[in-house]
Length: 224
Image (cartoon, rainbow, N blue to C red; front, side, top):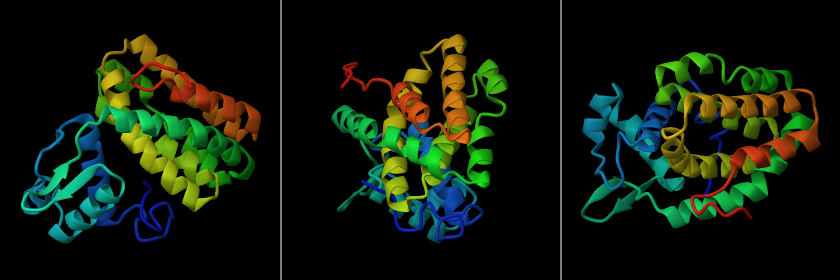
């Protein structure tokens, strides 16, 4: 499970600003938030109208989501949103525990000025979003943060795996976040910011430790 080639390159085939990247981001958020629920059939023309994009861009975005395991293509049915498979999410958490701490440590060692800016600024406006109950804004911040950390490691192959795994696990995280109190959500934001600061300061050991804490436990609640 990993994103396509060049999916993490700033000037590659999936660089920010491209229509298919915008459509991918919108589809990803709606799948995670449940606005596109598990097993829903995804009709390309309807999605193009929904997101004010072209069918070609939708097709490319769905292709990437299929590679990442968030949609499934079935004969005689078409493309559907992947089922919310607790076992798969459990496995994603286990692999995240193995990879993301080391990714954060690499980010602390290899980060560049642009990476630091993207990481440190990712949760700007979080307090207002939490106060407003704006889960979409919080999701966008979380996705931006973890993507920036993965990219800062300067290992595109690793980043593609980590981002794809994080997207799968976030389907559980958003359900969990909706049950959290605003105080708990603020604590989660503070932990993200602490990790960002450790990376900015080049403290690889602290970054790895905070990232492992941030990942938390899988749906089973069992720590590994």
